[in-house]
Amino acid sequence: MKIRILGCSGGIGGDQYTTALLLDNDILIDAGTGVGRLSIEALARIDHVFITHSHLDHIASIPLMVDTVGRMRDKPLVLHATAATLSILRGHIFNWEIWPDFSRIPNPVAPYMRYETIAIGKPVQIGERRITALPANHVVPAVGYQLDNGVTSLVYTGDTTANDALWEILNGIDNLRYLIIETAFSNQEREIAVLSKHLCPSMLQEELRKLKRPVEIYITHLKPGEDALIMREIEACIGEYQPRRLVNDQVFEF
Image (cartoon, rainbow, N blue to C red; front, side, top):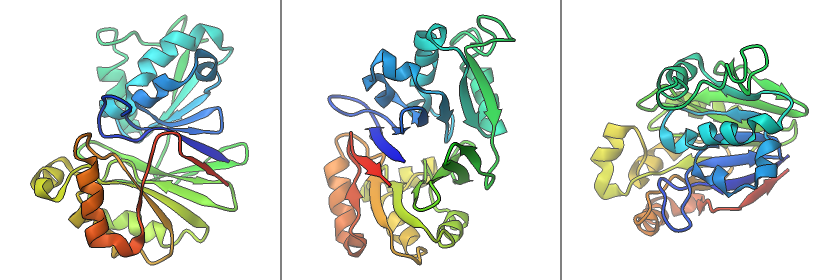
């Protein structure tokens, strides 16, 4: 299992791209602006997109990607998400007003894209890879994901704030090695973090106290322009966990 970080920022500009993780060559976990860094040939090899939630920074590339490579493929691109998230995508993105409904193009029998409903805690097996939705606590219906090859697991929280249910599950994953967790705001913006259901460093500190097993921690979704400040604040309050900043093109291979 090989995971390449295509984007991990909370915004855009310069070399900042929003969230997208490429699993091997055929699966995306979220599809933010980082997907646009791939070649057309690489885009055409993607068969599955697992979506954490419907916010634009996590889905921005899906409409353009399916439009670009749909005709090059011999099967639909599968969008995996909860029923609530799929409903939002149908109603607000693929609605013919914002973007065409590619689940019906070129025809409903053989479309360029199809939807697949997932449920929290129910694994999806694709080859030797098992992808399981985990609970998240955000302003829209949201999940995180556990990526498991049977030997090692990586957990990506997606966008979330305080989330007791997540830590209970993480503490029960015996093969957990990597944790990618968001911290979108600095401590001076804690009120905004609470309102938008994100984390700031002091809130991350409170959450990590619930973690009962050793794990490598990587920080994602930092706001551009505040990223260095956020990482300094993280180091100051939770340096004992040795969290590292997630970066573009970082690879996890296990």
